[in-house]
Image 1: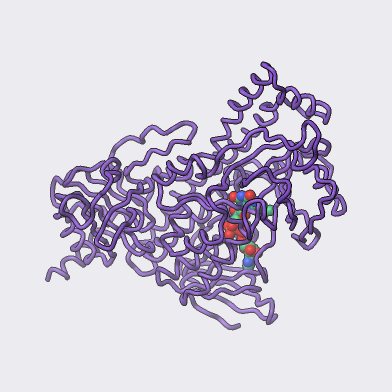
Image 2 (image 1 turned 90 degrees about the horizontal axis):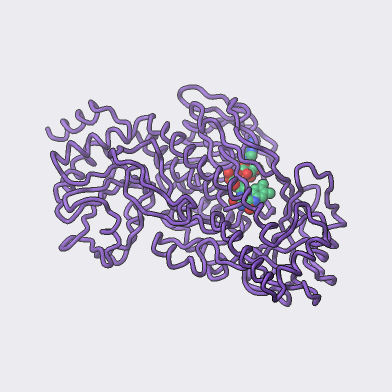
Length: 605
Ligand SMILES: Cc1cc2nc3c(=O)[nH]c(=O)nc-3n(C[C@H](O)[C@H](O)[C@H](O)COP(=O)(O)OP(=O)(O)OC[C@H]3O[C@@H](n4cnc5c(N)ncnc54)[C@H](O)[C@@H]3O)c2cc1C
């Protein structure tokens, strides 16, 4: 059987697999990606990229392509309406509208927190961008209609059997590492790793249609929730899918849910009548697109499951293969891309023999903790949806008549109507934990992992997670601040380039760090860029934002990892900068002291 050797085999060409390929390629690591599908899935899935994800896409030069086609941030509102059509007393009423996901009134705060605004882009538009970039990089070989059928591994690597579905042939790939980006469909069960957590909390459904809704939409929105007065769904959610945005959008996703114990299933013939009824547009004439081999309704199960560990030997799990979120708060895909970002620089450092294998252990240690946090937050926001019916006065399992009666009272121009609306606004305000959870999106931290703790306690966070409080404590994402350098304005998050280098940010009296970084970088063969910020330094802090968050004195320094997480923070230099930095780098990249010292000795000789 034909056999190929490669550093990394990636199984799965969904968003996390494609991102892994392009990031590894940027780091100079040859990789093969196999994907059994001929084309990108047509199912409307994730549609929200948070700021941390946009930052990592910015690091790899993909953000502009996303912004070019994504929905404008100004449209990022969420609406709850009674219907889109109709002229009855309860029709076309806007029950509540609020800004969401970094748009509108949230924009000023989110712009201060990150150089990358959020993006609303359907997964069906994102995946082609990632694939195009992955294919454009020479180190990656992207193979559609190639399926992993079996694999074995030993301490040196993985041998995978791949079926070329087009050529109807089989070949082997011997890889030093394998990334399971297969959505949990193929590999994890073979590894005996359990997925833990609640399953089957609801059956979520999506429909994809082309329809002209311009005459009916009350305004731009990222999500318009519509009451299902007469049908079985309680609510449905309408999302624009582009390519135009605003009311003129051509394609729409429509999401609804069945309760887990509900035997009812919408038939193919029932789709258009159900849409006409829910939206209250009797002459709606949509084109319904097929989504699966069996029809136009895609069903999936709401579950919050996380793998008990993220690796087994030389196989590393990322994205849905490692964790599956409920969709609320839009954290599933974002977490997957953040897994890959954490993993790729570590894999590259180990494969290029700049780091020891224990650096890879930190991948699962760090990302499992972060993914548990986001998966739990998503579930928490999912359960918070219980307030929605209460906000509008619907009793549990309300009948059509009860919903209409409750809404008539809610909308009435009476003192009690005003009370109901005020209560509704307060209750619906708790949904900010879903639509404005900036601390969940940007305040990622790793309790343990590849960094040197500085002994400071975990700072207090906003319990509702809406306020993000930037810190440079080791294990946390580096805060963003704009700096002025000789080449113009850069974010602190731009200093590590495309994850190719560490960066040491030193204070204005920290020239000893600059010298130390040069020595240590040469010793261990890892690039460390030095950036001094302050008066008379190459970088200025024009508006004092860095000064406000840096947490170090003018002789101190912060070492930033290639994935923009803080690896070391020294408040003030007290001792030998070379020794401090060498010890820290040795710990972080798992290089034994003896190796580092030997290299240093040879260099010095
Ligand atoms: C119907 C649906 C709706 C969703 N809606 C949302 C949402 O609204 N918001 C949100 O945040 N998330 C949503 N998600 C989740 C989100 O889409 C996922 O988090 C994201 O797709 C995960 O990407 P991935 O690359 O890890 O896995 P996937 O996208 O599942 O990609 C895995 C790929 O691996 C391939 N593969 C599997 N086994 C093999 C093999 N043996 N050989 C070769 N290839 C293989 C598959 O064909 C697939 O293309 C939804 C998911 C589904 C299924």
